[in-house]
Length: 195
Image (cartoon, rainbow, N blue to C red):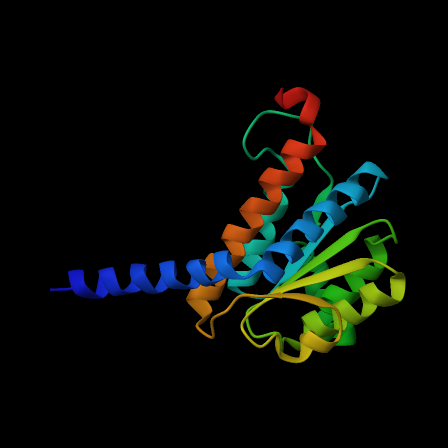
């Protein structure tokens, strides 16, 4: 019945993850992102996430891993997901346009010591592009988790490009990479507590 399709989907997911594993440059980017987040948190900064739709859910999920816990009990780590204040999104969207919903909120809370992680499977979401431009103007270290081509974001800042054009596979890898990020940051930040 559907078992062959289920197997095919799992195999496709595994194939993309295998390509991640074989991409040394991408693995180095993830390591650099871990180090940037650690440096930010150690100097009193925070990790800021943003994304639309499923990527918005991923942004909230990953931010929660920092502020709550990931692998062990510890103090919270400073992190926020842009777009979680419905009233602000409604007001900004109405007064300035939907393309400004993340950028305006970012301008209100971002400091140069922060890290901004934007998530966009296509790399073409206008409100994410505008937020990335705003973050760069503020002097915030900015990294995008995106898909195969990086889209329009590719030329703006550092992009971690998942080697797939399929949204579901990209999102699966974004969560995988996000969990790796959370786990390594948590472990390194609280290394004395882990031992």
